[in-house]
Image (cartoon, rainbow, N blue to C red; front, side, top):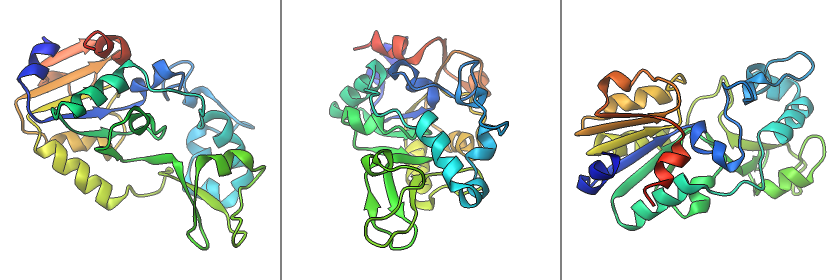
Length: 235
């Protein structure tokens, strides 16, 4: 059924969450082994990954960030690779991802809207110089700009920060123009990202997730399972 929908579609948009990258060795957030199960000195991940904690306790922030949020050895899995094939065939109009791992771009996709930012984009908070992920990984404690000594901040959206306006506009524009929207690997519990689905008015809404989501009742097709396994069978 999924293959038939894809074959008949001309403007597919993929909306993905953490479940897309678990097969690449990156933990999700809410499962028993997910990021939210971790604590540091009794502090919850939500607190550590907040804007206020970053500014008040940057060294503790980066200790947690390096340990749990960066996965430099992760490679694109079958789901990422299949989406790249769809883009090459000009069926996939865009990917809207909540993930910060950069794996969609690593797979080759160009039309990617990283609404929560990316670990691969880092900048100096003083002079705005940009740095790669390697600069953060190679540093100890608080990463500093080699030009001015300012703090290097990852371009990821922390709790308490707004999403990038122009990324959101682009993502919602793609969703509104899609004839098929595939929602995969996300519980749709994070706002405002989950509300992006309200812009979809196309023919087919497909949901792929291990657990039920709020979009299931509106979907043309609901597949319960692992995104990598389901999409991997389409390659």
